[in-house]
Figure (cartoon, rainbow, N blue to C red):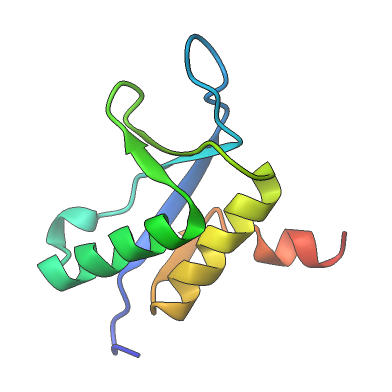
Length: 98
């Protein structure tokens, strides 16, 4: 694990309007501009494994299959395993008690 893990903020959104159907969607507002190319690759791998893709029209990462909370939890798990620090939007603690 790096000494200063890359930080991410997940702003979960409802993107179910117009022609888009999403079970889960988020935008990343953290400072990802200073990430290395390797960190960006790790992030893209986490997205893919959790079932998210970038939607150009909405400027959001969207999962179109599965259950919303399951996709959100899967992404948080993937990011944590990859060494990311989730500053906001981590749904894992909220879903454990359900």
